[in-house]
Length: 408
Image (cartoon, rainbow, N blue to C red):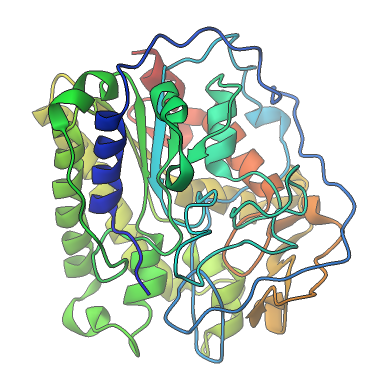
């Protein structure tokens, strides 16, 4: 089973732009559906449920007898103190591309030879088209960011993006199972035309949300990968940052000048970690957060380095770890009643086995932070995104906010 690496996703972006016409100006779009007062609408459950279990080596697809973890950029319902201003009448940037994993995948794995996919109910139970390949009940974080940036159209998965989608500049390059390291997500290499892509990419937001799989699907899986035996947390973080640095420089060479780097989230608070860690004594597997914090600190420093070395570009860091931590520490403030269990799954923490065929998920999905063992509910994603666009956004972004980056 092959999965794409970050380098391949960047190259695919170049290929798509090289094959498309010169991008036109984006005309103003009507105000998006989301506003400062938006709250997720959760429709009644449908009497079906399933996601066929994936093999043990698929970090985003199933949980078997051995521990298998994975990310989440989560956050719950809405909070008056974090509500952002309504999006503008027209997009703040002409284009937005995201490179990520299953937290933001919107169907890129659907027709690929992999079991890391979400193509069966109850995935998408609250999405208008039912299962779309999103690893959640409704919209994911990338969907919501696009709306808050002022776009009316949705991101197209790169796997079936049309020339019109590419020219419009709304393409999702997130793929379930992908990581920073090649062994986390095996790659297949394509070529591209940098010169043709460069002028358009300089105007876009480029969002890199990777690293979760490199920890939960690699470093924390010693029975499958040797990373934790070969590298202590400091050295592993260095390896991730060095690899990511090369990839970001490649993206810069293709023309990217506005770049968002998201850190790794609170893997130790995910239902999968709580259900499978043999030595857990609380509602958090804190030992997972030691290497994650080291990596996140280095990623934030990388932002400073890039901003110093590339004066014609701007890079920002998004602190997904702190965003989720504040929500998990005060869930009721954000409308959440359940933080340690998955809405869909069975066993300990409803996370021993991921949404098997005919599973029926919880009915009160807007009160759960986690949809399945690894991924946030739409309600959680909405709260997280609203905090990134709210008055307190600088608590979770550095050195400027996403809105400030878009307006440069």
